[in-house]
Length: 336
Image (cartoon, rainbow, N blue to C red):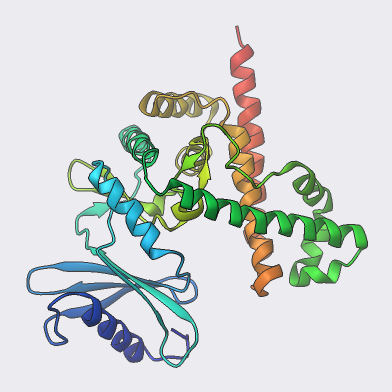
């Protein structure tokens, strides 16, 4: 859906696709309301019929909807609290060659987001453990592993390109990021020599959620049970469970810059709820930050998608957090 299209044209297209894929749905039988917009072509809608309410998400990254639905169905069968996809299709946008994916899920009415409480954190870590345990037995794990290797190979090529550009002094290849790259040359050199995007080699590597953050977890009802959503990264994320835990700790425990005492308290909560030491987490936090930087540079090299320098700075800050966390935990471990 192009930004030049009118809202009515976009809504008409979504209505048409909904009628195509929802059984026994007729054009006059429901109400469709746009509830939010994301970057690019991302749109969110609420579709209401006489007896059901659906959430519709439109994105311009089709991915592999069949594999993602299989993962979600597997998790539902295992009792994990997730939001399943009930209908999905991929179709060209009106008057465009852009492929759009439309997913339809049950609409969750009564929810809030993470409230920075001990209980919310404990419930989140506990449910993530349940999801990880279920994903270990997903029958198409090798398909996900293959997709992860393919993605990692692309990122390895990106790292090689960054190294080559700096070595040969062809800074203009960074485009609008040239000034940023020159200013952060030493950091980029460390990225090129230290970061290995191939995560599947680890003995404990498995399918993961891949993008654990507060916007992807809904706390539902008075019980505030966490429901995980948006598993589109799971179709190519094959890594140790510490990968997801690194995202969780960064985004649920460090967001408000806690002091050492509160940080240790939150670490205890996550370790107790998940049942695993977080000693290795700073290393994985550093790796997730570097991976995100590689993804942004790769978007520029492959598709000329512009990258705001402040987006890169955000991930450098996350790496700094990882370094500070490692030092903080080291001091605690040697304190008598």
